[in-house]
Length: 279
Image 1 (spheres, rainbow, N blue to C red):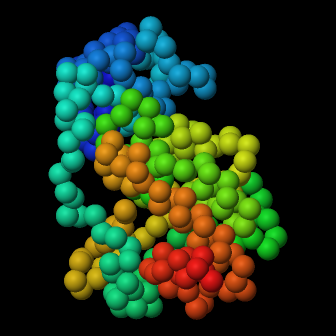
Image 2 (image 1 turned 120 degrees about the horizontal axis):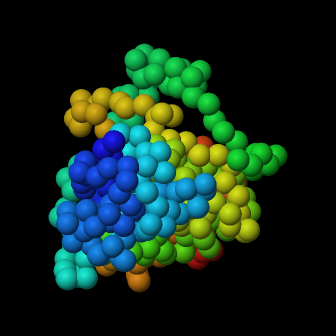
Image 3 (image 1 turned 90 degrees about the vertical axis):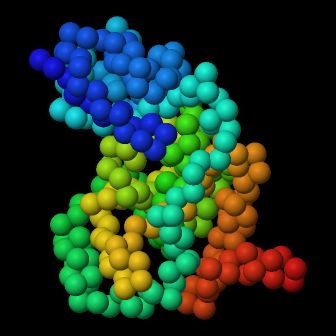
């Protein structure tokens, strides 16, 4: 039987349907090389496992029990075109900063159709608790893409795409907050990403639960239409100088002292932090 898969790499998807169940993982990697230019030895295929372990190159594709058009995330860099990796990627006009639409929030939060969508999600979505919530701890919900992990830049390892100070940030935040990981993707990809980042079994903090795209709703605003909000990009350029998570950990530590957050405007978190540090 033929095997069809979709490879996700560098913000693009590549379809492969020329292989059979008798072909091996190495054959798959050779096909990926022909499409992406990434050498097989440079490729890391996330989620491709046999009996819970990463599949070796000699494993037959039939043994992986892949469903048609299974999506596989790849990490790897073309050796012959590293200059492409070092160049800034094209600007994405579709990326919207959460804070930029603050004035529109009141337009959509109480609309009947949106409240109905939320009610359906609350009723139908099943949360799988990984660790029990701790009494007296507030809940901190963190998006993966562009906040903890730059999923579009090319890289050989998850460490290269991981935002600087990630583990220090989560360790600090866990002292005052229960942590939830969220992404507008499937739970399969969320699980693969946080395992690659070393978040799942880190001894210094715990994740309470994770939320995938099935837990979210889309909203329509008059100015922007359907909004899907995301903002750590260009990891290959910024990983040496980005200190946002370090600074944010100080802000979260500072506001954890408050009885409630009603008087806070998170848009001005840096101003708030600077003021407190100068007192």
